[in-house]
Length: 339
Ligand SMILES: Nc1ncnc2c1ncn2[C@@H]1O[C@H](COP(=O)(O)OP(=O)(O)O)[C@@H](O)[C@H]1O
Ligand SMILES: [Mg+2]
Image 1: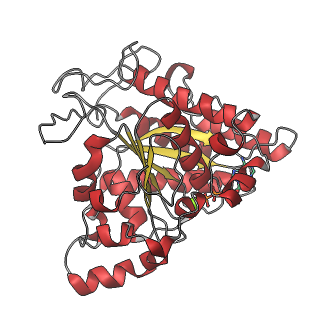
Image 2: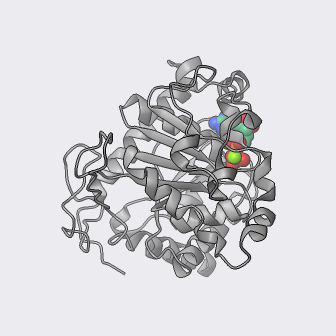
Image 3: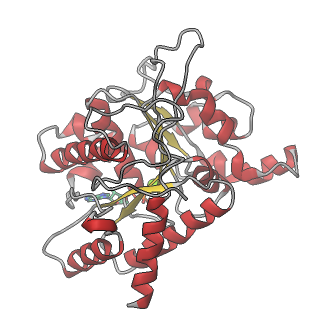
C-alpha cells in the first residue's frame, strides 16, 4: 500500500512539473524550412526499462497514426536491436543512422530516411533515423574519440538541429540503460510509458518512474510523463485486469485525471504479421480493430497536448514565448503548479 502510494506520488510529481517543458516556441528563419513561426515539436521518449513491452510497436504504429492525421513524425531508432528500423523492412547496414549521428560524424538531417528513399516504403508523414548493430559499440567509440565528454547529452545538439521540421519526434529506446537510452531520457520533453500485461509489468513501470526522476535530477529537469499505454491486452486474462487496476491507481492524479490512456491496444496477431511484412497496420490492415485503436490513441495524444496547453483549439499549437508556461492548465482545467 505505502509502496503503491509512493509510486503514485512520484507519478504525480513527475506529471506536475509540466510548466517549463511545456511549449517550446521555435522561430524559424532558416531557408527552406517550411515550418511556421510558432511551431511546437514534441520530443517523446518511449520507454520502460524492459524488453518486449510494446515500445517499438507503439512507436511505429502511433507515428503512422499521427502521420495519417497530417502530423509530421520522425521515429528515431536508438536501439542496437533496431526493432523500428526492421519494422519498416529497412536493411540496417545499408544506411547511416544513429551511430554516426551520436558519434558526431553525420548531421541528423543527412541520415533521415524519408519518402524519397526508393527502396523503403514509409507510411505518409513518417520519417526514420535508422539504427544498426553498430550501436553496441557506441560507448567504446565515443570514449576513443573523447574520454571526458559527457555522453548523456549526445542527442541534444542533433535533436535541436532537426526538431523544427517535425510535429513529433519519437525516440524508441532499448530495454537497458545504454548510452543512447540515457541520452533519450536526457533530451526528451516527454515520456510515454509502455506496458503489457505480464508478471513483471508493475516492476518495470516502477523502475521507469525512478529512471525518469533520475533523468530530471541529472540534466533534464523538465522531463514529464505524457501517459501510459497498455498494449497486448487480452481482456479475458487476470493479468490484464490486474495491470489496468494498478496503472489506474498509480497514475491517477489530481481530480481523478488518469495518465493512463483510455485507449488500450488489444493483443492480436495482426501486429507480428505486419512486422514480418515490414509495414504498419495502416498499410496491411487499415480496417482492423487494433488499427482503429492506434487511431484513437493518436487522437488521445493530440487531445492531451491541447488540454495541457489549457486551450480548446486544434493541436498542435503553441502559446507565445514567455506566455502562460508557468501556469499551464492541468487537463482537468485546474492550474498545475510549476516546479
Ligand atoms: N498488441 C499486440 N498484440 C500482439 N503482439 C504484440 C502486440 N504488441 C506487440 N506485440 C509483440 O510483442 C513483441 C514485443 O513488442 P516490441 O514492440 O518489440 O516490444 P519492445 O520494443 O518493448 O521490446 C513483438 O514480437 C511484437 O510483435
Ligand atoms: Mg523495442
